[in-house]
Length: 469
Image 1 (tube, rainbow, N blue to C red):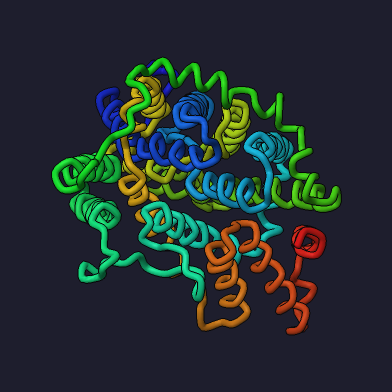
Image 2 (image 1 turned 90 degrees about the vertical axis):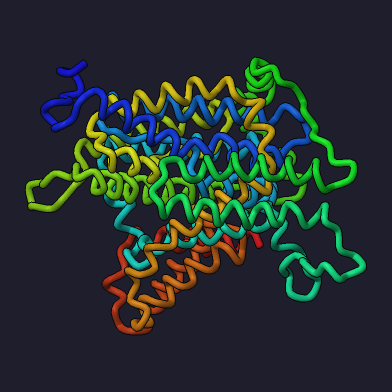
């Protein structure tokens, strides 16, 4: 083990690697509650939560083991925040594709990612998207995720005049209901708890706050709400495995190629364009997210190495990207959205994790967690919505790197940022960012600065707007 992972060579030891692996798991284990909670909206079958819970855990295990063994990095992978929301709320609810159809998009994303990594074409695609758009994508996704969190918590509700509004806290209103207001209070308290614990550098601040928020919800519910009840499906952890085999595993192959329901209300040209642009959006976001997270996590652990040009780069980058791509394919087969490297792994590298042994420890914890689905199912939306809101906060940091006083940079960046949340669609944000970038370059006499790849991707998105809306 020492020889394989080069533990001493990297200035670490087995104890430190184990602690790092446990720390990473604590920091990112909230995904086991948040992801199934999102996907449960896609089906009225009570077993869908358990099915996606197992799919989330399995894909996290595969991705984390691969990045540990192939790249020897102390990182971890799971269904990506933002991409899971894009899958559920945009591709399925917004565009009208089925759960299995969306899994096919994810599988295509993974296969393309593998091809780009093996052939080295990844760099060409990466550079085809202007830096000003690439930089702001995480913030746009963060805003999108936070918006969904506010909606899941019912803090933000529908409004006929302004589309959205704040839920009422007016205790003097004749329509006031403590049963409806109590969960809102729990969400606010949970978000603040995450912030306080994070500020105090408490390991696993998000998961601990979610558990605390759930406990508060049940305490307040039973103590202050008349007729409060908890709907418990089953406490048998093996039922989730049965639901997994019945509802999610392999659906990409058995039902993913059936677009009859979509074609009942859309044209074939709409299907083709939406298929290409949606798969492209999955792939681009996955790529940018993974590369940015790999760099950030390795920098946090002082693990970056110098390349031939003297630049700081991620060690074993291609192997890490390949692990990510294979894990995404695995996720599609299992029944969950795109798998990507988690920035929360920085918590593990920050406590000294240097090798893939830490990743294997994290994967072992996900394996144990697979048998805790009944516990995860008890977490109410008002508790896990707080995680969505806080992760949105974490992803906003990149806005400081944008030259907001430069209109040619600010406009594409701003449109990318806000259109993701305002249109409930990540790909629309990317489309508006690319289109505005190209238009500004053309009319400021800098058309030669626009790469051919940028034109191709932009025109695909323009075709999406023309043919599908």
